[in-house]
Image (cartoon, rainbow, N blue to C red; front, side, top):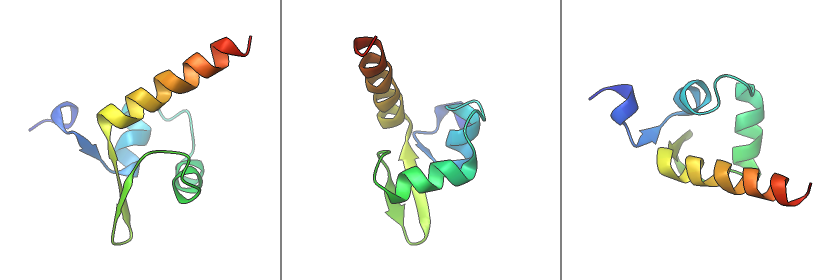
Amino acid sequence: MSLSEKNLLTVKEARSELFDNAISEYKLYEMLRQGELPAVKVGAKYLLRRSSIIEWMAAQEQSALAGK
């Protein structure tokens, strides 16, 4: 299975694949701890569902566009 086929991503994978490294790993962890991003925590590790993050990003974009 290639990375692009994975549904669950680690923070590093999500940062690279979905956020194009435009946000720091520290900031992602901060957002996860504050419940701003949809994720599941397994032990000390966060896993992000690709489809949930894409939906979250679309909602953020719609919100930003509505505010203009």
